[in-house]
Image 1: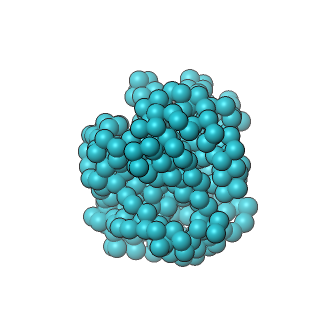
Image 2: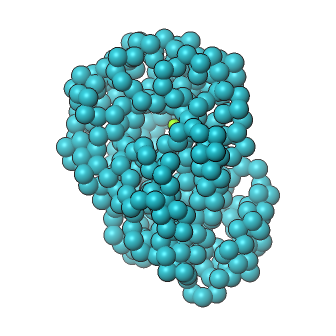
Length: 367
Ligand SMILES: [Mg+2]
C-alpha cells in the first residue's frame, strides 16, 4: 500500500452554456485529475476543481503544489498513514481543492486495494442520495422553466435558488414564482453567496416566510460578525455557512460565534478525511449539514455521493449533485445518471468509477 506516484493532470471540458458570475463568464471546466499509484499496481483517482475566485487556486497552482511540495514527501508513505499524509498536506495554509483531491484519490486507492467501496469504509449508511439542483441567477419565468425541466427529466424535487442580487425586486420574486409554479411538492432553499446585508437578509426572509423555505445559505459576508449573529437569532430557518467554513476550525468558529447554525460540507475542499471531521463536529454539537457542490465534474460528484450516503446526518437532506449536467462530456467509462431524483453510489471498489483513457487523451492539456 505504499505510494509510488502522484500525478496531477490538467484537463478541460466545455460547458453546455457559459456559467455567469459577478466576476465574468466561464466557458470551460478546467479541472485537474489526480492519480495516486501504489506499489501494488493500484491507481486511485479524484478530481480537483479550481475555484480561483473562492479559494485562489488555478489549474497551474494545483499542479505546482502537488508536483513540487506534496508528492516528494508523499512517496513511500502507506495509504493508511493518514495523519502523516495530512501532516505533509498541512504544510501549506491554503490549496484546499488540491489537498482534498489527493486525500480522496488515496481513499479510492485504499478501497481498490481492500476491494471495498469507499462509502462502506466511511460509514455505509445508505446506497443513494436525493439530488438538489441549483438554479442560477435568472428572471422568474426562466427559473421556473429550468426547475420544471429538471423535475420532468430527472425527477428532482429539491431546488437551491441563488439569491443575493436585489432582495425585493428580483430574488423574492423568483422564489415566489417557483413556489407558485411548482407547488408544495418541491423543497426550496436559498443561497445568497454573501450578496445581501444582514438587515436585507432578515427583511427578505420575512417577505418569504409563507414560501416554506427550508435553509438560508451564506446570505451576508463572514466579516459581518455581529450582523450574522443578529441574522441567525431572527431567522425562522437554519442559516448555513459555506464559503466561510472551508476547514474544521472555521466550522467551529462560525458555530461557536453564533454566525451560523448549519454547515455545507464539500468533499471538493475537505476531501474525505476532513469532511469526516466536519461531519463528526456537526453531529457532536447537533447542527444540520447539507452536501454542497463546488461545480464538480462526475468524479467529484461521485465523491460527494460516496461521502454523503455514508452517514445518517449527511444523507438526510438532498445533496447538491447535478452540476455535472452542465458539462458537455466527462472522463468516465460509465457516465453518472440521475433517476427518480436520486444518484446511487457505485458498488465497485473505491469510489467505483473509472477513467476512459481515450477521453482523457482528448481532454488533457499537458500533451
Ligand atoms: Mg453556497
